[in-house]
Image (cartoon, rainbow, N blue to C red; front, top):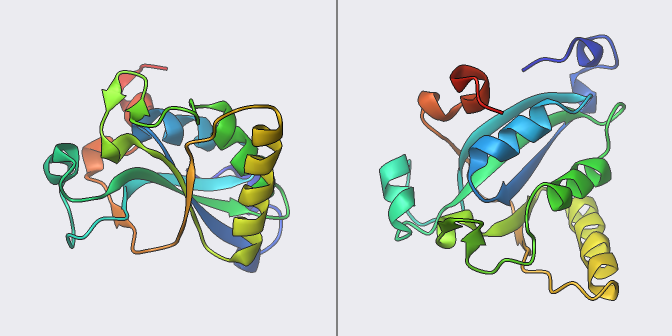
Length: 163
């Protein structure tokens, strides 16, 4: 989804990528797409040991992948820190076995950081939450290969009319 505001500010050199796993990717994608400065939010898979996994493979939990949203954003409009704060707001980062009724390793909470700056920001936010007595289950992982999910998963809420 290309936000009109994004196309009018800066160049593609200002575009950065972030990867967030916060349970089922449909809702995560929906929340990020609404944020000003987000160029696109794409549902997919990361962290497993099978090349080009299918949704059916990921759902078994045996592929090792997490459902992830790849967020491309214009850093002159929205910062990684703002994205990470939204990530922590839209899911239960204390749940250790999935998200809500979605139980399984594919629904774990994680940030796949692209560089040391993203890692440091995420670590600082986690430390702030821990100081508030939260037991943070979110893991930080270095970026690995991202596999785009099947087309029927993309923009799910816009296609289905559900919010």
